[in-house]
Image (cartoon, rainbow, N blue to C red; front, top):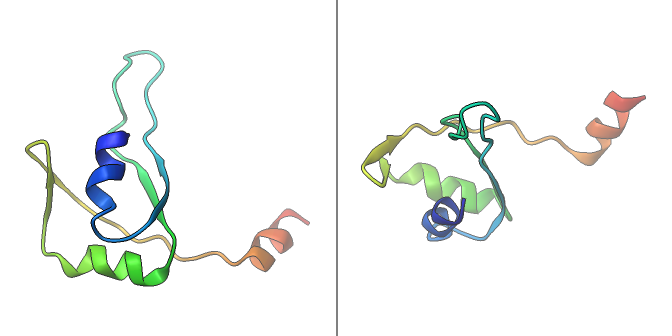
Amino acid sequence: TEELKEYFSQFGSVQRCQLPFDKDTGFHRRYCWIKFSTPQDVQNVFQKDSHILEGAKLTLKQQPRRRRSQRKNQSE
């Protein structure tokens, strides 16, 4: 997790980095979530053609932003 956070911090302020692990195998599940402070930080990441971390090429996908009001409405 720290390596991911350190890598992505070159593009902006990383608020959160979650790397889920499989409880049975103890290995990570080959995906993670990175939350940046601003939409511009996210755009900075996608401006680079490819990302390689520890010899592995990363595939990036952007999740749509959810507004707080949408979260509230979904729970009602």
